[in-house]
Amino acid sequence: MGKRIIQQARGKGSFTYRVRKKAYQHKIGYSSKIGEAEILSLIHSAGHSAPLMKLKVDEDIFFMPAFNGAVVGEKIQIGKKEVSPGNILQIKDIPTSTRVYNIEKNPGDGGKMMRSAGTSALVSKKYDHNKVGILMPNKKEVILSGDSRATIGIIAGSGKNQKPIMKAGNKFHRMRALGKLYPIISAVSVNAIDHPFGSGRGKRIKSKTAKRNAPPGKRVGHIRPRRTGKK
Image (cartoon, rainbow, N blue to C red; front, side):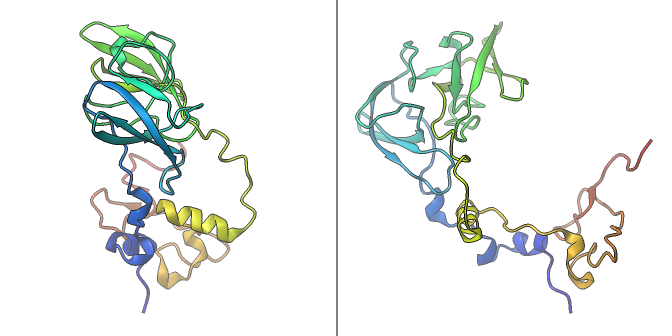
């Protein structure tokens, strides 16, 4: 009798394929208050690639990715039109060619874009009707509401991938903390009973087109492509 394939096992949500809650105990977001915030501490979070800042403004405490050069005890401005690293402004008030990160897709969502270590985007253009163009690292422009907020600067931790992972166990625990599936093996390398592509004698992979609404475990291969093969 065959086992559930990986897609089915992950969809079921067993302990093997579940993220530790402790890894994501710090929720990234912005405070609704305006004023001066103090950096209380810098936190290593297993679930995030960048270090996090614990900030306090009045009695409100919130967490967000640290900017490059952040120091405990430093003060940053929220809502004031002062452009310096770490300050949080609406993107309509940020000058063009300024590096920003933790950008809100919709005003008030706390920041959904540019949150991984070493990343930043560029404020490129100001449009009519309160729209601002943000240039992403892949050179594509995203147009957002001018009321969305962002943080000035570049996220810290850009060199996190330069240190080699010397042992497979270290890699395993690092990926496990992030809730990533690791190690990933090719479908054709497993037994025929465990996967539709399994036991490809001589690695002759079967062509398979899965329906768009197929359940987990059937969604393997091409997910409803318009066409396959060469023209």
